[in-house]
Image 1 (cartoon, one colour):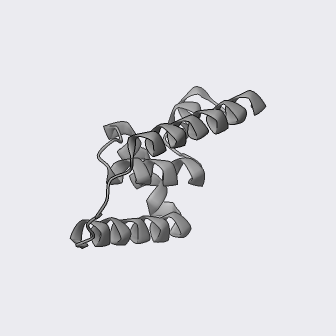
Image 2: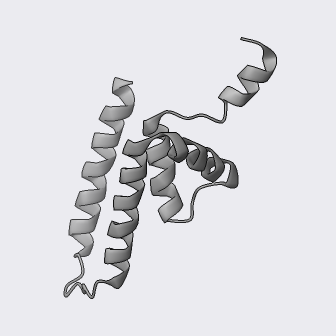
Length: 96
């Protein structure tokens, strides 16, 4: 593979990364380069086109929904949940 092909190859991303960028894009967290790579990927990948379409529909539905929460989480419940999350995260990180 010559140098120009290696440079161009960096613009192509695997489906997992494209889907992650799609998710980030929905929350305006994707960089311009990530959005460009996603656009290129979507030209060629029908599966990710469908994923992106469904993601947009879901985001639109959530924005248009009138769901309201009636109760807030208690402080001790929140700290217990945070503690459980941190323990699980530590397990996941130590497993890698």
